[in-house]
Length: 428
Image (cartoon, rainbow, N blue to C red; front, side, top):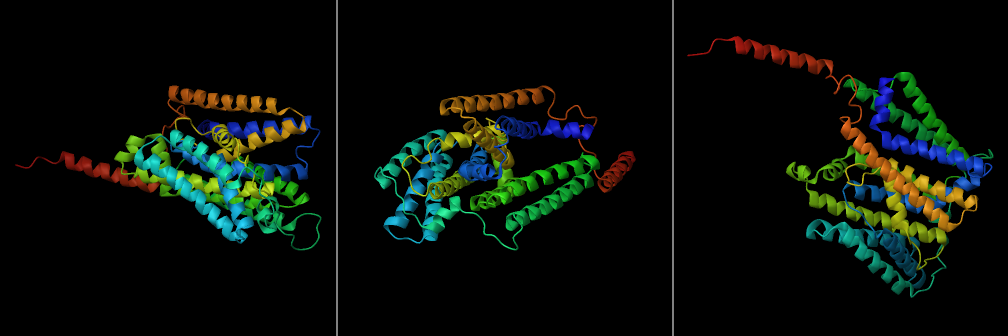
């Protein structure tokens, strides 16, 4: 029980948002008479919110590094407009237009990174300027008009679904196969993680609770896959989003770059004195945000089947809200990719549920604003609580995990040797 309580205390932001998401889903499932979790609505929920979730992945990394990016909506609109012009007016192949669109987004991110990292202008100012700049350039490129007639292959990025394979089972077979594979990989990774923690005598969940955790994760993933498979299958953009979640979770948790981002966000001076190239990390963080903004712009243009001058409006606010609701700290240094996805889903379910209930758009904006305020207030309260009590899990019997047996034996041997040396008479 102590291990469970310590785990909950140490991850109060993430678990709190998971509980909040579950409560919101249950509330709207009841109030909409079961419409929220109908297969077709769940499929639409993924397609309609994919671009915000993509932006939230990049935004949480920017926020962890103690920056902000206000330009993502304008950059997404500009990249989508430029790609549409390439395909319609200059007859570029759709795949080449996609590649060049991603390249444009990356270049814009590098432009931001130069001013932020090497010139020293705050990211707020740099990206505010770019928000105005690229919104204007979008209008210039499109000449104030909507550009349609895009290739079907390109439109499939935002509206397409994975193909059917195998016999007719009444469900989308490929979606279920992917879900089973995802569950198998997740179980293997969780078992390996638990074994590694136990090998160093870290606190781990008791085995029965660990099994319950894996069972709940399996049920959620398989039920979600079942709903998609009962509709039209996994959307292509959902597959892209899943790949991004895996890649960026690995980058932030398992690579030197990810550790440097957290170090800079936690204490930039300490990171600098430790040898971290803070300018290079800041540059790459902003460049990555430009890349994901370009991808979100391509997905949005494909979903709308046209490039629109008004595309991307308020994307930056939704992405920032998703990151903060998902547990990112205002002061930087804290936040996860999974948390940002959970925050984005909270916003997406709120939008979808309120639309199903017929709530007007003005009240939707007001309610989302209150949710964001409460999420940040919860973050501030939790930080004060942990600071006042010595940190999450400070009341545990042991403040730190004991060393492994082999390491303990080596320490005892060294202490014995030092004790013998200290008893030797001094040499004259």
